[in-house]
Length: 74
Image (cartoon, rainbow, N blue to C red; front, side):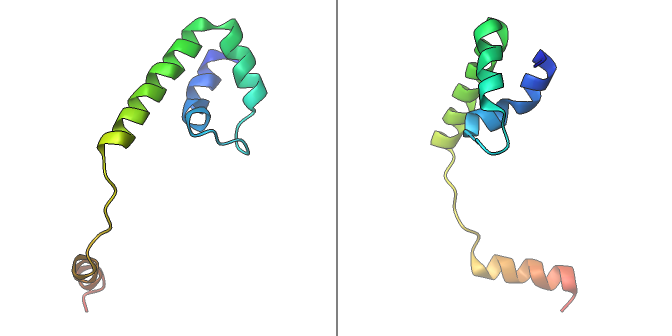
């Protein structure tokens, strides 16, 4: 697997998406390519930091309704 392909798959690797990712091939590439492995780990640390700092809140119902009215002109 090429480094370019690994860069395309890194977010699947971070999310541990086993169905969409040829995980064994990615891990073999990381074993042979410290540069890709280090880059993937840096991206993973960044993603985990973002997830820990950003709270997910639901959108208030009144805002959803206002957006719906604007879109549909009702």
